[in-house]
Image 1: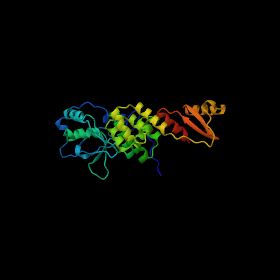
Image 2 (image 1 turned 30 degrees about the horizontal axis):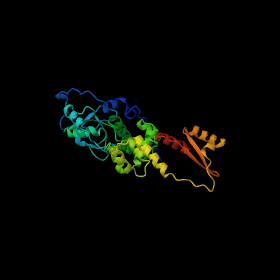
Image 3 (image 1 turned 60 degrees about the vertical axis):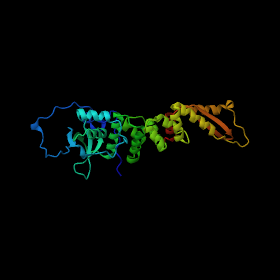
Image 4 (image 1 turned 90 degrees about the horizontal axis):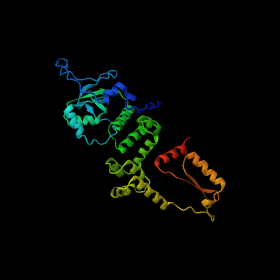
Length: 320
């Protein structure tokens, strides 16, 4: 069975996949070219055809031949008014990256530039500049995700769904995905955690009523939706939610019963116990406390201040 292709780092942007020249034509602003002389204009009957991938010059296609991308990570396309007015006045200065749709003649799927395509429709343009490339599904999703992350702030939920799709559909690890989008692995892990929130709380993040930081803090509550409403009403900060979550955990923490033996007070820890604590602290980089509950029963407590530390602990404990 063939293995999925290794991700190519996109820390420099789309140039890692397309090449510097083509990225300049695809995602960087280009000066408006002077109108071609009438003699150079092709006959009206001549239909535009996709040029080979080796020819990187953009061509023009009727706007109706373009289709929304199957791997577009963005789910909302609001706030296009300024872009529409710009397109109406100056035209589309940046070409749209597309790929041919198999089985359909003169049909192309948008890989990068769907916001520009929608704005061009609203501005009633008939033709738009494009760059045609033959891309597989993995490259289509990678480019669509990175292009949105670099151009306009993408909703953390849409970003998380795009990251999860890279993992689920293309068998990539979190480390692979981090290299693809030019982010740290803890960032990828923390963003993916947002998908564990209820759908209504995810929608609050999409609507920017709460932040992604609020969302991660809400994961510490049994009823995130209820606490989210409280956070909005009382204008609670992320730190407020973290303190509230810590208080809730302290209230619900079960008291371990011992078989007639009292726990050894923390002030009376043996030298061996303190030595073990020190070894754990050095290994995990966190404050650790060992409490003897009776016999050989021992409770280990780690002080974890944020999700980045938690992610690092999980990685160290599950590393093989």
